[in-house]
Amino acid sequence: MPLQIVEKDITTMQVDAIVNAANNSLLGGGGVDGCIHRAAGPELLAECRTLGGCKTGEAKITGGYRLPCRYIIHTVGPIWCGGDQGEQELLTSCYRNSLELALAHDCETVAFPLISSGIYGYPKDQALQVAVETIRNFLQDHEMTVYLALFGRGPSRIGRGLYDEIRVYLGNRYVDSDAVMSDRAEASPDLMAAPCEASFAQPTYGKTGVASLQEALAGMEESFSQMLLRKIDEKGMTDVQCYKKANISRKLFSKIRSDALYRPSKATALAFAIALELPLSETKELLEKAGFALSHSNKADIIVEYFIQQHNYDVLVINEALFAFGQALLGG
Image (cartoon, helix red, strand yellow):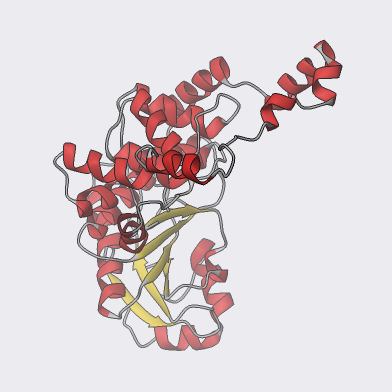
């Protein structure tokens, strides 16, 4: 997917460029800045000495040296002073200028830390919102894979209010599948010990099986790909609008469009349902076309259901919530 939230050490990521949350001197410091300088080696400091520092909101680029990336893009985030000192504009500029530098150097993959959210004090949920919105806007016009490498999950990532609402929604609906199976086993041990023969019954196709099988195949229902493309047309969307909104790459969408029998992952199918702003009933129908279902024994499914019920179809916001609860993200 074009924008991915990951929990990784940015210095170990094999991408074209990583972004360093630097200070104005560019000569190293604490937090991510210090980690990157230590991992890159003294050659990085030597090059940084030639750059003449960097203003807040701007970005400069160096080699990657001992890191597994080709480049390091250094940007200086704002210090949080309550939010009324232009912090948001400066933070937005950090991401935008870094992405423009990456584009100018033909980078296809870029990894960011959550800029200014450490010792600079920018509230993590607000810093994440700025990062996601700025990267999203950039990806509307450019093909690039961007990673947000974060440390830790939980309410600080999406805000305590939303986190608590989702937690309550989960608490009212989540069913532990292991507990359910245990209860069923206690209630009917013979049933759990042997599968029902009917569930393994094989279909019959007559004496040869050929004619009836051909008839069955000829009567196949609409596939996932066919339903998806029909829904895109019905919504008056272009292909690009749909796959961008779903946080799906152009390459993956091309595979789906060119193959009427393409079977996507559940995460991909759900991302398209969100992009199309389908109600819950139609979301379930689209999932069924891909061979999946929503389940209340799956926390990720319940979180997605919560957002659909709230008519919030922003896939990146949903992914922020899924990340905060330790669940897999939507997308390709």
